[in-house]
Structures are given as C-alpha cells and as structure tokens.
Length: 88
Image (tube, rainbow, N blue to C red; front, side, top):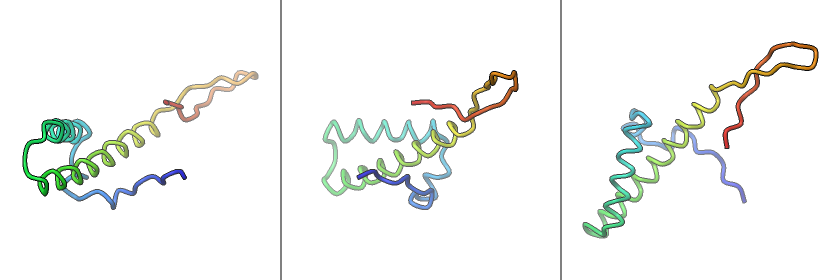
C-alpha cells in the first residue's frame, strides 16, 4: 500500500512556520535525544510525535522545491521548452 502525501493541515502551525533548515535542525536534535535515551517515556513519545511532524514538513518543503525546478528541453524540431525535473 502506498501512503498518500501528507497535507500541510497535518502539520502544527508552529512547525509550518519554520524554514526547511530550522525544521531539519530541530529534527536532528530530537533524533539525537531519542538515540541517547534521555528523558522520560512520555517526553520521548511527545518528541517522537513532534519529530514526525517535522519530517512531514521537511518532506513537503522538498516537494515544493522540486516542483519549482524545471528542466530545459529541446525537441527534434528545435523547439525549446521546459518540463518538471525528476530528482530522485
């Protein structure tokens, strides 16, 4: 089963306001904390949930950036055009 793309509504407003770089930095901090096992279980669960929302936000930002990148093409008859880039 393929998961559908998350909507921006599934991201809390405070996370939606973050830049990609700020969201990624916070996500990395959360991952380090979880890997180190610091804190109580309830705090770890809350951090994991926030990390999940940060990940969705970062993925959405990357999809938006990818959609804005065009690849210039030249057809056989010399017509110049553009098509969405395929960045995998």
